[in-house]
Image 1 (cartoon, rainbow, N blue to C red):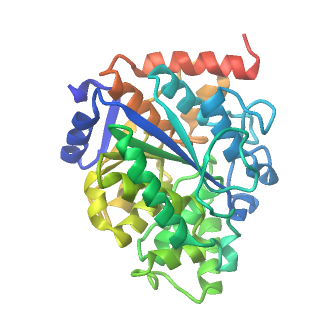
Image 2 (cartoon, rainbow, N blue to C red):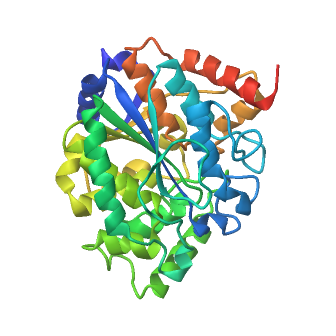
Image 3 (cartoon, rainbow, N blue to C red):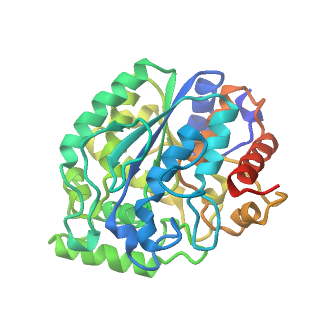
Length: 366
């Protein structure tokens, strides 16, 4: 049955099919973990916001969009410098179509969203070039585990996404500290993936922390503290707590590989109940390699929503096909679970129609 969904399997076919079979027709809870890091403001790293300073507003605005269908922290919706709308638009449309409940969890933001959210007591992250980027990592992980366990009791399975500008650079930082070869393999919101800039930033951060590639292999908490971001401890704890009882779909792109690596270092058996759900744009991206990162340390399946915007009536959506943005706010995972919940009644074509409808409303278009 599950194979009929508009879902591609990118890694570990057997486990991926079993995971889809297990969640089909079940009721998920979607959790969006928001956080900010000064790393996202380094010029040339991220397209999440009209300009680097605006990135502080992107996660709260994304969270508001999920709950309210519109943003309160900003006018309109978060856009890239080229005017491409946030992938949160895809997430909102998918969750709305399948009537999936949403919980927003704050890992550490500068600007609090104007909606109800759960706070884990984390702070916004510093620039990883300082070598000291995240506060109270262990404490946030422990609190997130408790929340994950409780939320697992309230739903059949969990889908956990993120919104954090600059997150693929911090992902490279943590993967490098843990000895996972990810240089040239993390994705980007930008058309030209700034691999050399990311590598440079990460090396600077590791040096400032007195560390080097693989030197924190056995200390994931310190790896996140030195060169990570505040989304990671929140998401890792939620997954560990949730996966003890129910399946967990980690909804995101290459950032999720860093969280997987952290979980693998803390509680590897949690990964038996986990899959990654992303978009076709990430798995087919020639400038990154999500499966190549995952295969180095675990067998977690990778699924991708087979979204295609090439026939959209809006140029702002068609442009996703060029490789801009690709993923974020759990867009791929939300699309997968919307399809799975309704046993294929939600198709990629139906989803595109809903995305276009919401896009027109939010952008004030006819």
